[in-house]
Image (tube, rainbow, N blue to C red; front, side, top):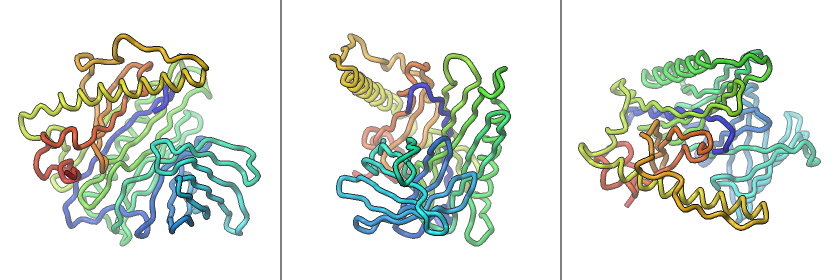
Length: 345
């Protein structure tokens, strides 16, 4: 979450039958990452064997694999070299701590020039006969550059649930593009979107689509939304369906969110103070109270917890997203609900 950068997130949870095939993207043991460099979205596959790393990545708009080899040390520092199809080095990635929430990655040419910041997010997916692949929509004149997820099957034929998922995601993407209102100054409008797989196994996929939108003015627009869809029943899954009827789970979530926002706000202030060579400023009042907290605008699931989104004002955009551990809401979870299946006592 970065202040000043608009991100519009759709968390798409798709429930399928236990026998349905899901979206494994790589061979067993490989990890998948989504990221961007220089404004271009890419998908990366990495195999780690001890300290040795191999794999490939491809830009969404190109789709051709670029070979990667490198190393990962015990502190999590990742060094990768990339090569073209003739084996010539074309660039390198360096991440200070792979696996951290913010791995702090950079890309550069082999000699270290043309350095660019890299976002890199691990995708929590399983392996089966379906894959999640990026599709793109671009309109340079309107400033539109979009990547959205689609399911494909190794055998070529999708099951009805996967086909419905694809149609739904495409329709939502097309509507978001249509709703974008460019400003009057040509060349200064931007509508960008990518995605992350929050969670995927044989029963559930939760996909987060990130959006950056600017059409003039002092700040970009920042908002979040979600859709959770049960493919076997062909219906939207509501947040209430995760919890026992009548349970006060929203209060538990609100208490955690408020405390977490305050914790992060203090950390932000301490980091700013350190970089500016001053003492941290202590506030008398919290950033937000439970009474001031708005309704949850959208949600998604990860292996570790429930992600909730809020529509805060621009100055609080860094706090729009909070992951609530399952342990915080475990007593309210409905037995055998999608969330309950991931909670480990």
